[in-house]
Length: 282
Image 1 (spheres, rainbow, N blue to C red):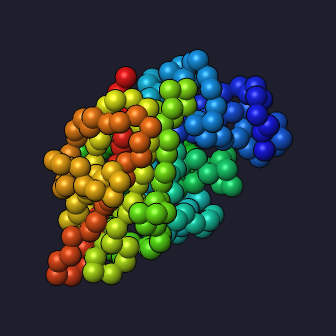
Image 2 (cartoon, one colour):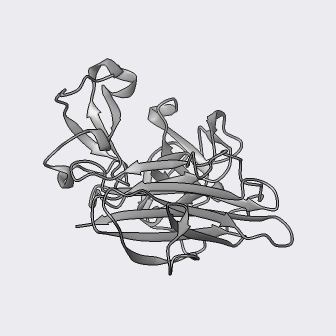
C-alpha cells in the first residue's frame, strides 16, 4: 500500500494508459524492484512521455502484446515436445519478444522461464505487432526478422463457451472514472457466447470531457451487438453498435454511461471476442 501524497517514479504504462509501472524496491529482485498502480489515483504532468511497456525499440507506442483466448500451456521452447512451465488463462495479456521461423509459436516474457522467456501457441492468442517480432531459434538466439512467405497456417482453436463473469448493470465488469490528471482512456477485452456461456457484458465509464471516441472491434465465429445507456435508457442513435464501429459520442461530464454487449443467438455455438476502447477527446 502507498499512503496519500507519496511521490513515486513512473517508468512505464500499460497499452491502454490505465496503469503506471513504478519503481518499488519492496517488490524485490524477482520483480526487478517495480510494481503497478492504477493511473486514476496518481497525478503526473508528464503522462505523454511515459513509455508503453511491451513496445518495440523503434516505436514504444507500438506495443507487441497478445491477449490469450483460452487456457494454454507456456512451453520452454516452440513446440508441444518442450516442457510446460505454467499456464495462462483467457484474457491474460502477455508481452511478445519473438516468434519461431514458421510464425506458429510466439516467445513471451515469462519470469519463471529460461532467461525470463517462454513460448505459446499462436493459434490461441490474439496478437498485435507480430510482423515486427524477431525470429528466434529453439536455443533462444535471434536468427532473423520478418515472417517467411510460406508460413503454414496455425491450427484452428476449439471454440468453447465464454466463461461466466457474473457482471450486471448494477455490478459492471469494468467501472472507470476518467479524470484530467489520471485515466483518459479505457480498453476492455472480453468475450461473449450463446446459447451457452456468458451472453453479455457490462462496461461503465464516467467521462470528464464533453466528447469521447468509442471503438468496437470483434473476432470470432458469432455475432454480437452493443448499446449505450444512461440512467438505464438507451441513447438515441446508439441502440445497436456493431463490430467495427468507431464514433464520437457527446457526453455530459461527471455522468455515468454504460455499454451493454450481447451475443446474438443463432444455431450452434456463437462465440465472439471483442475489444472496446473509449478515449477522452480534449
